[in-house]
Image (cartoon, rainbow, N blue to C red):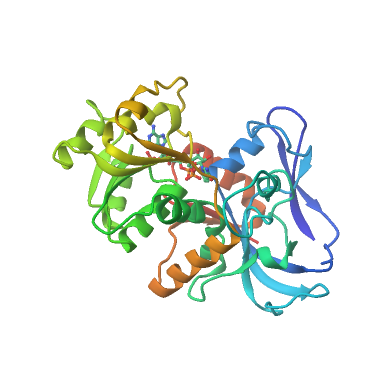
Length: 335
Ligand SMILES: NC(=O)c1ccc[n+]([C@@H]2O[C@H](COP(=O)([O-])OP(=O)(O)OC[C@H]3O[C@@H](n4cnc5c(N)ncnc54)[C@H](OP(=O)(O)O)[C@@H]3O)[C@@H](O)[C@H]2O)c1
């Protein structure tokens, strides 16, 4: 089968097309013909050698893929050949809170991912995708969408009428905008690009702010909330934006800490204490959360925003577009 390998032990790894034997499903596993895969910021960290330890020297990259079940291993029930599925980011995180053991194995990180024609998945981690989505759209769900869903529904328990701040127009934040509007929240969304701000407004953002403007979007959030602050900030900026988030959230409000695209280093934590902020880190979501999210997407006919679809041979170009930050929503490789 055709696949890609990321190879190299230290620093930036090389992305190489390879020809590999087709995998065979064992007991409790399914063979999936992958039709599309999508990229996440995390895939750049893995490729650049910045994802920490535990990454093999040779790895099939990318966590997010969707395709069709081609064969069932012994003892598999609940799935049939031809079912359309996406693989769970953490195949061992079935339900309940995250555990150290469940976090150990992540597709396209500590174990092989989905940038290949075929993958074998545990049957419980092959999650049926909403019928109305194409494979390209369904391939965007496992990481960015599920992280946004987990942040808003499981961790922050966002309620209709509450105000949420979202940062930038990457995969997680655009999904979060779509879910937040589905849930009846008010969204204040930031982007560094005028064109992207227009697209965020067209997708339903109630207010769009320039996160490069002075005196700063935190000030603007306070102005928009009568000086009170937002109920929730979905934080993808990290040290480079957290102190603004501390100032933009209301006393007793919540921040879900997801990423660190804005760079920066030290954070002064005093505002967390004085403003009684609930600051929670999260990582993607469980198989059960994935199923619940898919029910919501299916019920509401929601469609993920795909920036561009690349051919399999153009996978390296998809990485470069992600690196450039020019994308809006998700980048997909058709397989
Ligand atoms: N914890 C988890 O489970 C989890 C899961 C998924 C992702 N993440 C993390 O979340 C972050 C976002 O991931 P992603 O895949 O959505 O990334 P992405 O698609 O690459 O999005 C990057 C976007 O961030 C925005 N950005 C850049 N600098 C910014 C700043 N100073 N302030 C606000 N926004 C800024 C830009 O949007 P504009 O061009 O519109 O300004 C850019 O397009 C990454 O750090 C990733 O590692 C964590």
